[in-house]
Image 1: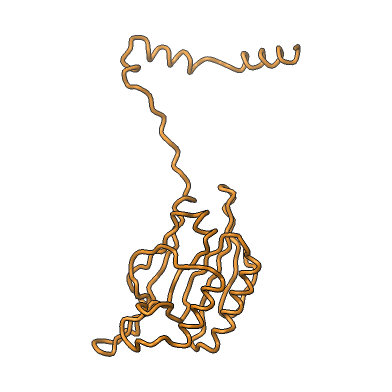
Image 2: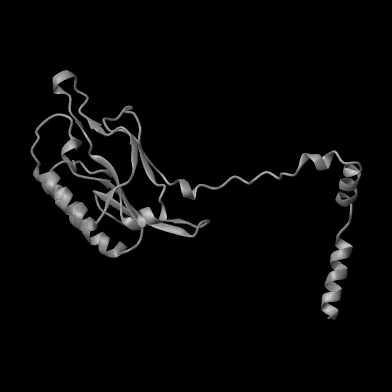
Length: 204
């Protein structure tokens, strides 16, 4: 269910009816320039007041690095965009969800000394999200057509369990009269017995 949206973020609520669980999920596609991203950071801070102590995850292209090791090449100084992104993350009290796969999620697709690799795509969550989905994990897959790596958020504990097969001790099938007894019970009409029990309950 979409709750609100801007040109940089879509806020939704997701409900797993079968498991009676719900979470808030925000999908981010941040602007290129750090000044334009300030509107996004303000929006996330406002949404955090709405989410309060409910499970919340934020995922997408933030167009900004968060840590020093999020850039493979280029300047080693902390940019204004990184600093403001970090301030927002600290303000809304979220952190990276456990992840696997590629660390650098974006590349300029240049060769040799002109190549740049950065981690600007992330999956963040608050502590309430991790409490509800402790097995949550982000998978950053290999590059394909886009300069960004595809990302999948996996919530293992909300997958439907397969029905368990019926099991019994094989030795029972080898006992004399087993098949005959199964056939007798299988062909028994229990409707008369149920009607009799129902009539007795009504009489009492």
